[in-house]
Image (cartoon, rainbow, N blue to C red):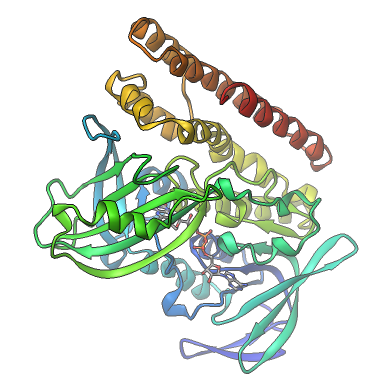
Length: 469
Ligand SMILES: Cc1cc2nc3c(=O)[nH]c(=O)nc-3n(C[C@H](O)[C@H](O)[C@H](O)COP(=O)(O)OP(=O)(O)OC[C@H]3O[C@@H](n4cnc5c(N)ncnc54)[C@H](O)[C@@H]3O)c2cc1C
C-alpha cells in the first residue's frame, strides 16, 4: 500500500496513514461495501472504505437476517458460524390470506447476526491493507469533465477534505448518498419511484414458549394486514425462543405505518403474549429491477444503492454481495488490460445480469402483478395450486414462470371460476418471458445503453397497460 500521508487517524488502536488518492474509494460499509472492500483487498490495490457509523455498528441495519445458503455456495463465501450465526433454516412456509393454505418451500439458509457477519469482511479487508475510516461521512462526489474523480468526506472535529479516486463506489444503501448528486441523465443516478419501495419494520422478540419447527421461516400474505407486502416470523433456531417478526408495506400508496399494522394485527396473536422486545427498527428497501448500469464514468453502485434486492421477498444481502462480486471481478479484469474506464468496467453489468439482474427484472413484473391481487384472488390461486410449491421454488431461485405451467393450470381450472385472473396470469407469464429475452440484447458496450433503456421502459409501460388493467 502506498501512503501519501495527509491525515493520521485511529481505528481500533491502529494508527492509519491516510492518503489523498486511492484507486477505489468505497462509501458505505454495509454488506455490499464491506464485501466489496474485502474482495478488492485481495487485488493489491489502494482501497479506502468509509462509513458514517462507528465500527461496532457497521452492518446494524434492521433486517429479517435470513440469507439463502445458495448465495454462499455461488460466491464461495464461508458459511456463518460462531457469533455470526443465529439460526439454521430448512425452508419457508408461505401462508394464504385466510391461512387455509400453506405452501412449504424447502431450501437451506441461515439466520445471521448481521453485525458480526458484516464485520467479518471489514476486518479481513483491513487485515489485507484496506484503509478503513469509521464515523466518516461522504458529502458529495467530485465531478470533473463528465467523470467522477473523487469524493468530499467529513469527520466531526476534523471538518471536510477531498480524496481523489479512479473509481468511487456508492454502497450507501437506499440513501444513495453519492449517486443522487450525479447528473440525472447518467444511468447510475436513475430515480426510485416510491411505489418500488417497501417500508418494513421488525422486532426481535423473546417468546415465552419455544416455537414449533424453529428451522422453518414463516411468511404471511394478507392485503389487509400488509398491503403490497407481507408479514414474517423468522425464528432464530440457535437461540432459545428468539424470533424476528416484521411487516412490510408498499410505498407511495398511502398505506398505514408498518409498525402500527404489526401491533394491530400480528403482535396480538397468542404466540407473542408475554414476549419481550430485544431489538426494534424499520427501514425502506428497494423492490424493483436493478439499475440499468452499475457503472458509469468514475463511479459505480452496489447493493441497495443499485436496487439489487429481490423484488418479491425483499431479501437483499445475497444479491448485494453478487453485485459486489461482479464489480470486483470487473475491476480485476480492467486492471489487467488497462485502467478503470467505463468501457473496461462494463463487464460488471454482464456479470450481474447473468447472475441476478435478469431474474430481478422478471420478478419485478411478477411483484407488480401480485401487488394488485385481492385476498380472494390470492386465496383462490393458492387453494387451486395455480402455481405450486415447486413452481414457486423455481420462480424464486431462477425467476422462471414457465408459460406451460400457467397454461396447464388454465386447462385444469377451466370452468372453476376466476377466468380473468387466469388470463391475467397468462399475460404476465408472457411478459416475463419477453423481458427475459430482452435482457439477452443487453448492450456489450456502454454507447448503446440509452437506447436499450428506452426499449426496456416501453416493455414495462406496455405491461402496465395490457397485463395489469
Ligand atoms: C426490515 C427489513 C428486513 C429485511 N430482511 C432481509 C432478510 O431477511 N434477508 C436479506 O437478505 N435482506 C433483508 N433486507 C434487505 C437487506 O437488509 C438490504 O438489502 C441490505 O442490508 C443492503 O445492504 P447494503 O450494504 O447495500 O446497504 P446498507 O446495509 O443500507 O448499508 C449502507 C451503509 O452505508 C452507510 N452510509 C450511508 N450514507 C453514508 C454517507 N453519506 N457516508 C458514509 N456512509 C454512509 C451506512 O451507515 C451503512 O452502513 C431487509 C431490509 C429491511 C429494511
